[in-house]
Picture 1 (cartoon, protein in one colour):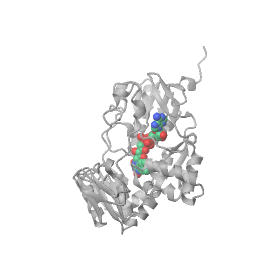
Picture 2 (cartoon, protein in one colour):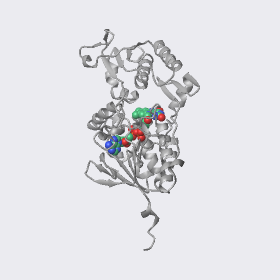
Picture 3 (cartoon, rainbow, N blue to C red):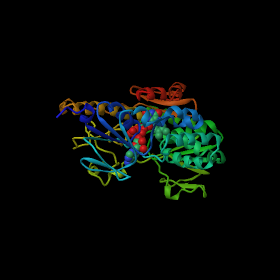
Picture 4 (cartoon, rainbow, N blue to C red):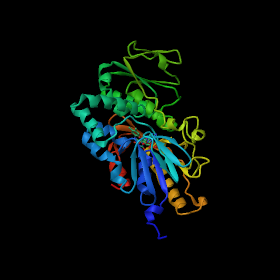
Length: 390
Ligand SMILES: Cc1cc2nc3c(=O)[nH]c(=O)nc-3n(C[C@H](O)[C@H](O)[C@H](O)COP(=O)(O)OP(=O)(O)OC[C@H]3O[C@@H](n4cnc5c(N)ncnc54)[C@H](O)[C@@H]3O)c2cc1C
């Protein structure tokens, strides 16, 4: 029999999730494998550009990218994966997609529109107010999204803030801190109270940076209460009264919940990977980023149990390591030669209002306008697009 074309000999790699990690992996492997990308939306969106797009809709033209723009040699299935077997993925539409290798990259689920056009329209509507229905849908979508990152929340809830004299922020992670910073700088007359269950703010960064952040917030008259929880069952914007675990009653006109959003792994709970989920619903992976105990299933990005902060630049590194390993395995390389992934060191920049930020680098912390400038530039959109070959 005549030799078949090389494309038909390629191994099938199915990538579930077209976010930061899944999109980059698909793009990287497209000429080395028969790549199938499954994602409920037709586009990849650079998450850290969404705030700028809210205030400057044309920004989204570059940060919302159709999967077909970078995945020119792969198959895109616009659907949600709902089950997997040893050999196939089942989509919500009932399609079965066979795989040789599977990569799970479903970081977080988001309530966003299916098409890029509709997404861009949402951003436009936000600014010009030409389409109230789209605006309402966007506000709902962004409210879900911004359980994790506060700035868009601000856009959606701007009126709520404007009409309040006092505001309670529940949670002192990056979302809560950024939200408190925005309000304190833009609305210095409002009373802001933050309640955080931990003993320090921004628990993923060091004490020095956390303390500097606390000092900065205090200097802006934000009242920070540590080591207490707000009883969420007792929260009520109508009564304007909130109980804490320490027995305190906090009076505030409204509140914002900034306690993080769940990982996108609930769909895995009834699949063959159910035993591979840890107590936090994250997929346990080995040093080669394979799901523990699985030979041909990898997991990358925020869904993994890797002990590091969940950041997009680390999700990109996972994609690069996994691309290397898949290329090796698909060309018959030995497993012992696979690349290993070492958890990233803690590096993060959390903005504090419009100009300042606190940065945690591996050997130093910095607060003020210099880290503020790093974060607010092009928001790394040019760099990310380049990474995607655009
Ligand atoms: C507003 C905001 C700002 C941020 N700022 C920064 C920053 O400055 N720097 C930084 O490094 N990180 C930042 N992050 C964090 C960064 O975006 C995440 O760490 C990164 O997106 C994780 O990538 P991921 O591919 O694992 O998951 P995601 O990007 O969340 O992608 C998951 C994908 O999976 C899809 N999906 C989910 N379930 C299914 C399913 N069942 N079937 C098929 N597809 C599914 C989703 O639609 C989505 O496309 C920010 C995040 C947000 C939201």
